[in-house]
Length: 133
Ligand SMILES: CC(C)(COP(=O)(O)OP(=O)(O)OC[C@H]1O[C@@H](n2cnc3c(N)ncnc32)[C@H](O)[C@@H]1OP(=O)(O)O)[C@@H](O)C(=O)NCCC(=O)NCCS
Image 1 (cartoon, rainbow, N blue to C red):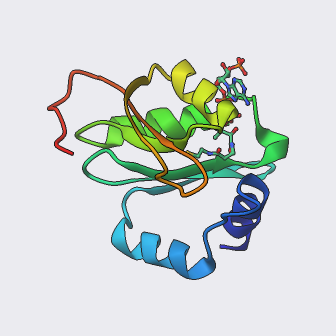
Image 2 (cartoon, rainbow, N blue to C red; image 1 turned 120 degrees about the horizontal axis):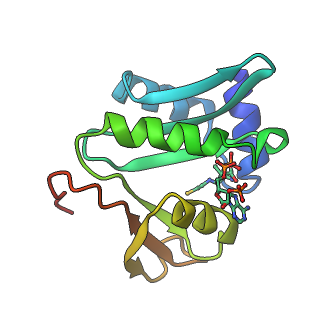
């Protein structure tokens, strides 16, 4: 848990999820809160639900651009019967570039979703049963 909290704090300095939020996620999604462990420690995590909604993902800064985010994403995408889809801050250009590299496309935009930023809704069309939002 501490490794996840550390990665979270590094990934989202202003909006990091708390320990209780992660415990809540672990309780709600015990089969799809995936943590990637490597010989050099925990690289990152991804949380997805059965609707294919990716709730969060992050890779430790020192492990980025080495394909770990892709590993987590493809694992989660294969696990979920639908999607995946997610919201991302419109100003999170690094994450948007990553999701585009994963093949995701823009489904819509929610102005002011984060208060100080809009949300982009991205989806990966894998030809699975369409999700209902
Ligand atoms: C988004 C994130 C999970 C990507 O993890 P990662 O392990 O670096 O991703 P990968 O190494 O698998 O990247 C795959 C491809 O995505 C693209 N990509 C990833 N990060 C990128 C960035 N910051 N800028 C531009 N393109 C990027 C590249 O095409 C990359 O391939 P390349 O390295 O061969 O050029 C990671 O940057 C992160 O934790 N960010 C902070 C948390 C965050 O914003 N999470 C998403 C919230 S919705």
